[in-house]
Amino acid sequence: TQLLEQSPQFLSIQEGENLTVYCNSSSVFSSLQWYRQEPGEGPVLLVTVVTGGEVKKLKRLTFQFGDARKDSSLHITAAQPGDTGLYLCAGVGNKLVFGAGTILRVKS
Amino acid sequence: KAGVTQTPRYLIKTRGQQVTLSCSPISGHRSVSWYQQTPGQGLQFLFEYFSETQRNKGNFPGRFSGRQFSNSRSEMNVSTLELGDSALYLCASRRSGGASGELFFGEGSRLTVL
Image (cartoon, rainbow over all chains, first blue to last red; front, side):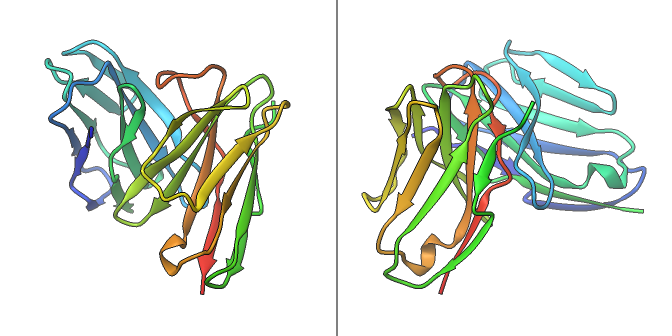
């Protein structure tokens, strides 16, 4: 069974701080997706990383896929209250496997 | 274009009852997946349907079942409800089957079992 572990489970920070969320597995994935879910909504895809070592940037968000395609990280620079939400990583293998998520709260 | 629509949004049932949840995918999307979301467990995969056929199934008991109609709309059913079935049930669609590709999620059906 492919499992994805996310850390930390919960993060509460002040506006303007930087943070990193980690997604780790012992399994190799063909690609990895990151979703963000806001209260009362379904998850929304942020990015898909495909190549080992790949780095993708989306404004203040930087996503990295590990060289061995087993892990990934999401780094947010100068967090804003609008970044608040649940961040989920999902590994693509023979089926999509989700991590338990990281709840991020950014206080103004 | 319209997103994924799930009904009902909220429902309360008692133990032993059964429930049917409905999902209308984005027009043109033929794959529908169902997930159970609970605090601390994340999204647990229930099943995926593509062109009316179940393509993949998660590790849930037989009380959880689903189906897909010719118009790609999908329903899931949970029989003999247990307290632990209380969760947010999310439906997601994508254009083709398989694990890759972006999933478009609905807002979910929140089930409370008393």
